[in-house]
Length: 281
Image: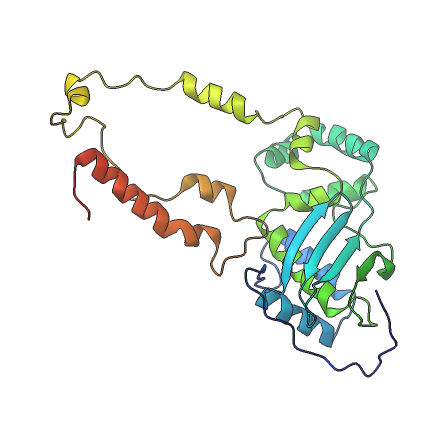
C-alpha cells in the first residue's frame, strides 16, 4: 500500500458507481461467514471498518476474483481510476488436500454432506486435527495491499472487500475451499464423487424422455384434449434456482431469486397460454 505519511488525511467521498457489488454487511448468517467476520474483527479497524462497511453497502467494490490463495478486487474510491486491492492467503498444498480428502473418505457423514453441497461445522475441527485451517490465515498485514494513498493497512477499501467476501461466502461456502486451494469439482473427484459433465447429464436426461403425443389432433392443428399434457402447474417455485442459490457476487438490489420471480411467473403464464390457447394480451 502506498504510504505518503498523511497522518492528517481528510476522508473524501467516493465516486458513485453503477452495477457495483452491494453487500448487506450484516455480520454473517451461516456459521462459516460468522467465522469470517470474527477474523475481520482481529484487525481492530475502528473508523475504517465503518467506512469500509459504507463502501460495501453502496457497491463501491466493482470487481472481485478468487484464486487459490489470492483475492483480487477493484474498489472505486474518490479518484477516477478504481483502486486495486489484493489479499494473499497461503493455500493448503496439493499433498495436504490429498491427505485431507483421504481422511474425509473415512468420515462418511462429512463426505456425504460435502457431496450434497453442505459444509458441516464439524469440518472445522476436522481440519484442525489434520494440522490445517479451514479458514484463511494471514501471515501478516503485508499480505494485504491497496493502491490507494491511505497510510493505514488495512484501509477502508480492503475493509469493503472483506464485507463483500463475507456475503459471498454466506451464499457459497465452497468459495472458502477455493481460496484454500481446492475447487469444489476437484474435491468431489478426490472424494470419489465426481460430478457428471454437461454432456453426460444431457445424455442421461434424454434417455428417459417421454415419447411425443400420438394424438393425430396434435399435428393437424385441431382442438386438443384438455388433459393432453396432464395437469398444468399454476405457479412456479423455481426449484433449480433455489437449489443453485444466489450468485456469489450478485449485483442486484434484491436477491437473485426475488429478482427473477416475476420473470418466471410471467413465462409460466405465457407457456400455459400457448398450450391452452388462452389469449393473455
